[in-house]
Image 1 (tube, rainbow, N blue to C red):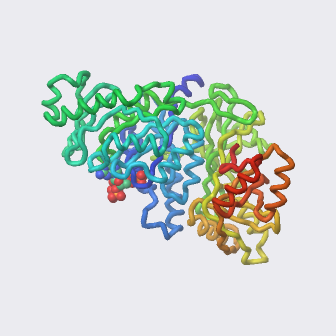
Image 2: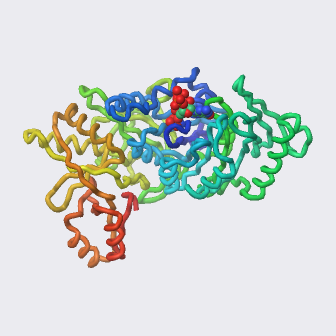
Image 3: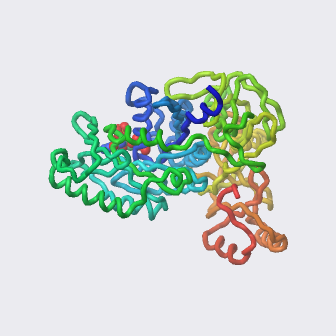
Length: 524
Ligand code: G4P
């Protein structure tokens, strides 16, 4: 098979949701359809238990398990599907953000009773930054929940998506009978006892046969609702979806395997194949002959005796081959890989080659940072792999003066892995660690001690946000930096960052220094 055929076959996506909406269950059902796993429950082991919030070691252990399911691949129809796993735990949200830089599309799972929840909002926002095409799956229709129209209003208002219902629920909870598949004009009926669905071709909803299938009241309601749907919502448009401007919506119940096949069939029809990628130098087309890719995630080995790590590489163009020399652009070094590995749901295996859309795990002894590029020689820098402003901050202190070198090295490597972000104050050199969740502070402390033999403690620091700075107005910028010098720090790449104490202070600065750009991500 040629390169173009390989690319056309691939669909690489991520499933995002607020915890408990049903992401793990849906992933598992998709894998069952694809034959990648044989029994339900295989993916569950990857899930970080809710009860574990206070026990970070348990979470790290679970994260260890999750390497095995970082990428779940399976064949469905004539497509090679790659699902990239995204951690559900909110303290690891930055991992999820970064994984989303490596997908070509996403499925957003929403709980019918809870509607759009805070993490759904954040994750959708990250997808929108890259115009990632998104399909919405409204889950748990076997339970009582919100009215379908109200839910779609929420989807439109809270997360700014343009809903395009592809299926419509018939009843809900106890009265849930199934859905009408608007995309294929089929009635899909739910049998709660056998947990199976029955599909009936049904092009004309005015056909009196409808009453025989779902009863008089439900038939009347369905006709009315579908009329409204047709009036209110746009028709499906492939181009608008691919541009991230239209979002197909499905209803179902993942645990009952209901609506999952419809979702998968439609996904395979409409989801985008690997898309061109932006670099600072030029746009990279997947079908270019020369290989290129970037690292979006680094996973440390849990065993302190083996400090090797696994760097996850997304292939962007050309063919990646085992035992071939590639350029590590940032280090300006040639590297070759004898054991490039795929991490599938059921097995881990060494691969000979991989194509755009594929994810390869590379064993690494500390050469890679998030965002690093590998190419056949061209000096490319991939865009759109930002750091996000952390939400919690603490000052790090060295608790063992004999080990300051180890502490510095450990901190640097953990930051390269993306465990957290470190900002060094211009004034006084104080090191500040910023994270999305409180748990990372414990993880860092533990790993510094066990992997690097260094000890640290933290001092609480109340900050609102870290904002990356830019400006074209040299004079104003200089004045700002001088005035606020106690609040200025540098990130790991030497970029200037303003540490805002409060939303009010940030707003005042934005007003006083209109020519200074305050950015909430490092990608601008
Ligand atoms: P997550 O990965 O998004 O966090 O969610 P997960 O799939 O683990 O699902 C969260 C809970 O919701 C699980 O119950 C799961 O069984 C349930 N669930 C998923 N899909 C459906 C559905 O369609 N209908 C209903 N009624 N429930 C659904 P749990 O009790 O937390 O876990 P478990 O004991 O079942 O494993």
